[in-house]
Image (cartoon, rainbow, N blue to C red; front, side, top):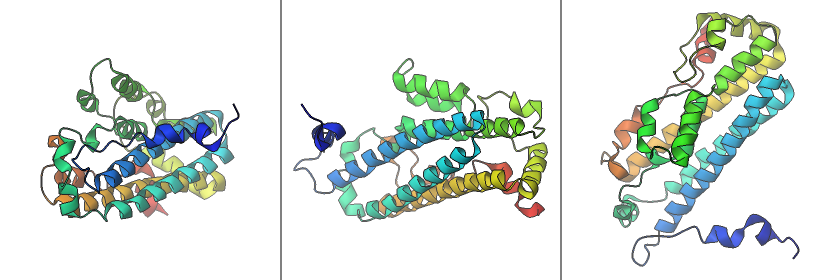
Length: 260
């Protein structure tokens, strides 16, 4: 049988993945499901791109690394725009099916937790939300122990001839990396003397900025939909989300802004 558009993309299977739980079902539940399923597909792609980026950094491939960073940032801009669609869901429309979510919560998205770990927000306590030994648990445990994207970038800088301290290259990858004055001095030198690598630095800042913008839009969308109510699954809702705002994933690149 020849390959068709539907068979290649598994369209029939894909369209069977939306299963509203409300009676009727409620009209707006389908939108809620499709938006969040599309987020998970984009998370899968971002993980795919960032794992590739780590390999590019390890191989010293400057040009493809920069190209990949620009693609990731473009994906994040798409994620930000998708919030516009979710914001068409009024509080009454969401409440028409919210109880059906039961204990389900976006905090349980293992792919988003993988992204957090890959960006450096390591926290072993987050594994407690997953069944020990499950595939999701094992994926997160692997990410917890693995070098972050920033670690790969520092390794790239070292191979480019910059004297990155051994303490930064051989740290405990399961812990959050602290900002480093020594690394910041190297970055200042990169900006002044290596245009292509400085462009890579700026592309990392672009991703950091877009990620923070997405978090902010997400918080405001939740706030306008449920206000200060507890989130689904017993989460703290808006209060927790507000605590995640304005935390850069690449703090060293922000710290040097006042040094030029």
